[in-house]
Image (cartoon, rainbow, N blue to C red):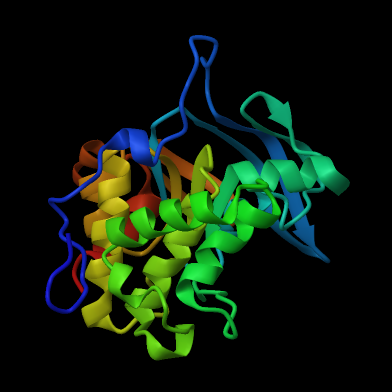
Length: 272
């Protein structure tokens, strides 16, 4: 599973049953629905009438220029950013405003940020088991067993007893992914998960994410990594100026973008 440097083997995988929540026959329809969502920061209108549907098992990659609203949309889906108008539903339920219902929803929506947000005073294993023990009320032995399986899955089982500061940036981000997976979320949100990494560490994180996509995890990924978008996405969403300008399959978007705004963006980003 792991190489000499602790990097994951992108061809390895424990299979979808280990990572993807079980679905009953009643589980049908889209998993995330965003309808007519608006968001302002003061005078700045950052999300303008956003409509997006994410089906179960679908990988949606959100791309576009900086300041286009991508991260705000991602953070709105688990209510880290409250919206001013419209509706967001996760698994058929509208986002709660606050309280226990919101905490329960956030347990079902994993989030991986640009910064790793690991607890510096806890070991990697303790970081991964904290949520399942405190929120899911798992027994410590069960939580630690599952955590070690996940750390193996992301290629850092040999780092379990170390503290975050002892790991590379890529290893810390993989630990953050394992921490989110430990909650057995229904959907994973990734907000520019590789943007804070040194270039040589980017692929080790993208390999883990590609494996999750292959295993059927529902994912919404904000990224500048066009190779990942082409390789792993079922749908590419292009955002600019607070709006969804274009939405298509990766093949169609990258070879035959429909809008001038998207064509201009691609002409700049694909030539660098």
